Length: 122
Image (cartoon, rainbow, N blue to C red):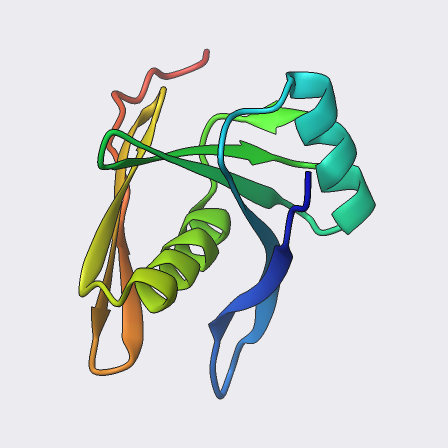
């Protein structure tokens, strides 16, 4: 199996140095152990794995320690990669924790994250 990885530097600007993330689009999901191994090999703070299935883009995020439930910069990097590859104005990334929408407007990418109820920890 030949997997092509990309690294995106997101949140970049005059006052921001950026935040790197790996992006891998897969044909099918690998085992959790293989996803973690790929993330560690890429050696970025987070790696986004995307599988296109039944017209949907499904996403999972892995840090170097394991799977995480949501990642803003990983989502933005994955969205930018998919928007560029498929020539889309926007993409919805579906995860077990909600949908993330990435939109491209005038060569700038924006991000809409799912909302969760906050629970105070006392």
